[in-house]
Length: 124
Image 1 (cartoon, rainbow, N blue to C red):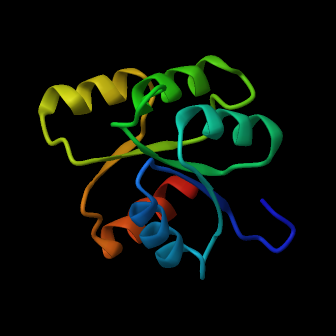
Image 2 (cartoon, rainbow, N blue to C red):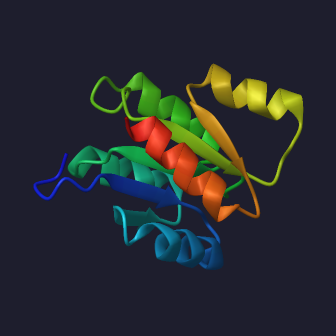
């Protein structure tokens, strides 16, 4: 972990309001980094230490599913837990997410208690 024992959570969402909300919720307990695209998220992960990724599924260009696929294909980032953030609630969406390596799903709008519980659980 980081020298002051705070984990780093990367928040990836193409909606600035979602990033602002999640950052404000998490900033007291974790270091946060943000990306507004899958491509930027991949660059951040390649160049810095990230302990967990909160990843929006529906984004332009490189969507969350493809971003997760690429993260899991790279040995350097394959072990980072990915939690999908999604407004989708279909079983097949969750199955697809799990098939590309996601460890969990958080529905939007995000419930703060659920967010803290899931993030803490996946960082253990």
